[in-house]
Amino acid sequence: MNANAHQLPIITPASTNPANEIAKELTGRDYVSWSAISTFRQCPLKYRFRYVDGLPEESVSSALIFGTGIHSAVEQHYQAVLSGEEPPDVKRLMLAYRSAWLPHDPDAIQFGSTETRTSLDALASKMLTAFLNSPAASVQGRVLGVEEEIRGMLVDGVPDLYGRVDLLTEDSDSLVITDIKTSRGKWSAEQVEDSGEQLLLYSHLASEISPGKKIATRFLVLTKTKEPVVEEHTREVEPGNVKRTLAGVERVWRAISAGHFYPAPSTMSCASCGYREACRAWAG
Ligand code: SF4
Image 1 (cartoon, rainbow, N blue to C red):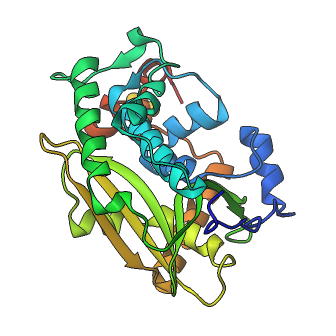
Image 2 (cartoon, protein in one colour):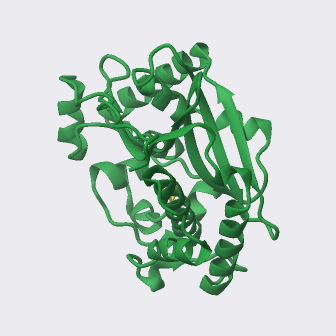
Image 3 (tube, rainbow, N blue to C red):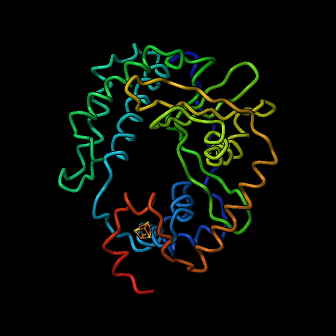
């Protein structure tokens, strides 16, 4: 263990929140995740298929598996930093990336029109090389956790939020919560703004870790461009934004617990949806 790393406090134990029981009856899990909330916002029927009915997906997009693989590889790098070990080279990071493909039936993977598994593997190698050569590979301050579990009550009447923080670091005056992303291109200021809600909620829960410190959220974006680049977008948390996000989560949970499930077709969501047949068969 790195001398800089310290044992995190348990962020928030499972609360006695009565909404946890409602969530368990509905979905089998006594919490909600950000992924569940954003799935409902994308398409309420897709949420029902996945979280209430537990339907297996008919297909999975290559982009999802690719992103998971890059994520695992970058996390392995930071795990080595946390443990005080020599960071893995790109060959070892590629093993972590490849492991993301193993659980999937190759016939059920939906590739983009110009993609193959070989072309994606070559892109992954370029992206991970760019990451290792970027300033983001060296941590500013100290690493407190990688893939750190976080759980706690956000709002009365809403089940605990449960999630995993990709990277948690601390410097002399700030606690920084980092989310690792892959993207088709560089992020605009609007994308940073629009993607910040998950980290705002995690920052709300994490404020107990280092009382009195400022909390910042940070996106580490690896682009899937021909010449991949690694971008860092760091922002200080503004309390007004947390309040707005909490209000949104409360409305989503109200709709879920009231059973408001309906299809919300859109070109972007439906093209990569793994429930297209179940959706066509749905009659209300
Ligand atoms: S196919 Fe489209 S409308 Fe149907 S469940 Fe999937 S995302 Fe929703």
